[in-house]
Structure formats: C-alpha cells, structure tokens
Image 1: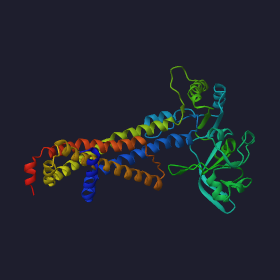
Image 2: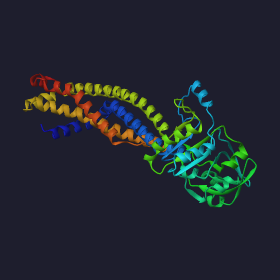
Image 3: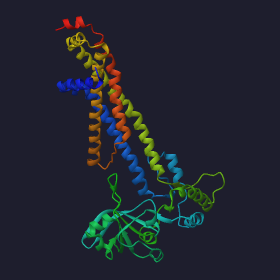
Image 4: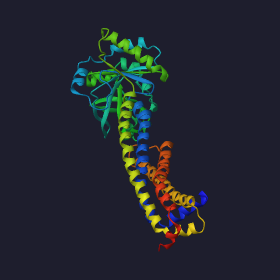
Length: 414
C-alpha cells in the first residue's frame, strides 16, 4: 500500500470517528498549546525587556553612575546597609566623568531617590500622581526624548534657576487637551507657578505603566522646591553601543579618583546599564524553561499512551477488516503501514491543533494584557516535531500487532 493511500485512509477513519479522535488528541493539543503559548509570551517579554524596558530606564547606548544599583529582586539587609553607607553621587562628580569620557554624546545629572509625586494644576484642571524630576539639559539626549511641542530645557535655565518646566505627554494632554496649547502656559506645582517650555512626545506604556506622566524641571529649580535628594544619578550616553563598555571602565576609574578610594578597596558607587534588568529576566525565564518541558513531557506521554490504547482498540474493532485485507493479498507491511500512518496522522493533527490553540492563546494574552507575545519559528517546529515523535513512538506497537494477526482467525471474528 502506498504511503499516500495509507494517509488518505487514515484521514477518512479519523473523520468518521471525529469525537473519539478529538478526545484522543486532547492531551497532545493541551500540551502543545501550553508550550507554544508560554514560549510565545516569554520570547515576547525577552524582546520587550531588551527593547523597551531597559532602554526606557537607562537609555539606549547609555549607562548610569548611581549610589544604589538597578536591582530587580531581593536585596538582603546587610547588602542594603552597605549601600546606605555609600556617599551620595554629587554634582561635583560630573566633572570627573566629563574629563574621563570626552567623546560622550551627552552627560546628564538627574535627581534621585526619593522621587516626589504631586498634583499639577492649570486653571481649574488638576492631574494627580505626577512624578517631578530635576535634570540638567543633556538629560533629554540621554533618554532619546523627542518633542511633540516646544523646546527642551537649557543650561541657562539651570544656571539662572528659572521656574520653567517640560511636561510628559500625558500630563499636557490631561491638562490642556492639546499639547500645542501647553507651550507658553503656566502651571502650578506645589503652589509654585512654572512656565511650560515644551512637551515630550509620547513614549507609551511599559508593562501597563505610563512613561509620560512626569514634569521635568531644571535641577537647580527642583532643589529650591524640594531640597537636594539623598542621592543623584549621572547618565552617560555614547554615540555607539561598542563605546559603552570602555567608557564604563574609564568612568569607574574617574569615580574612584573622585571618591579617593584606595587600590583594592570596593567601589562605593555602581555603574549600571540596562543589562542588569535583562540578566534578571533571563535568569527568571531559565527557571520557567526548566519547568515547562517537564509539564509538556508529562502531557505528551499521557497523550501518546491514549493514542496507543485507542489504536489497540481500533485493531480489535477492525480485526475482520484486517482479515479481509490479508485474504485479498495485503502483506504485513501494508497493514503495518496503514495503522502506523493512522497513529502518525492523529498525532500530527494533534500537534497542528495545539499549535493553533497556543497561537490563539498567545494572541489573546497580547490583546487583553500589556504582555507581548511572539510565536517563534522554533516553537512551531517543536510543536510539529512532538506530534511526529508521539506518532512514531506510540504507533509502532499497535501497527505491529495489527500486522501479525492471522487472516483465518481474523475472518472468524464478528
């Protein structure tokens, strides 16, 4: 019997027993769908963290010099106490960095922790829970901010401690309705009147959190309103990605000189890029990837056993059919091929159905939540491969048993 004819007969048999075939494949469908959906979400999150989250916090081709590290996860009490004993990052440190990294595209200073939140008013309109930052002029370059309207802060604003502000897109839209109307208007922050110079173009949300709900002030103005923060952050932006690592080394040397650290002593500062966030997420996904295969394998094995049992039941039910085929001249290999093709077709269909369900679940997650999901080519390949492996592994025995039936005994079966 040609393989194509065996597959056609297998499809006809499956179609004639649709409900039984569905429940036979349910284990494989669920397992493959789970695999595809979880991998899609994890891959989407990997790209999301690398492309948006890390870049939004630190900036692209940039690094930060901080008192405390960008830490995602648990910090034990002893480590936290050591961090708190570190000196603050001060404006005086910026000069050392400028001399150490003269090719930097921009070096900015920004207010650090704690970041105040307050209401912002314009006439009779108020928007609450707005982050207030104090920054130097190059900060917009470090963060790759584009302007929807107006212009950025300048060094003159900082030197003269002008009461001016740049708004995030959400703040301008909520207060003015039209971002163009915000420029030149006066808002009130903490009872102090500030002239709006510009509006940052919309950055969007990251994990459901808006990155457009802020007001930026010249650092000197910010400190006159809120006082100096417990620490500050120096941000350095390089023109190219390959310039970041050597610049970090030189910045480390400069900071050790600025803080008068002796050779061999630990740094009392941290130099961070977005790689810390990416590394944490990669560690988390490795843990998930160790659990997912175990769950999938259990489901696949259970599904394979179900397919084998159903095929053995099918051999019993079709004993007379097998006897007739053998009496008409069918060889053992023809019977073996027929039942093997049936098991293989069943399992491959289960893999395809699981793939479709998994892709649908991934799309649903992307629509209903801020989590991205990307169905990758290798997860599609694994889904189809699992179907083939299950068909081969669990279809051999029923096919072999069917081929060994005695045609005389088979014809006697009713």
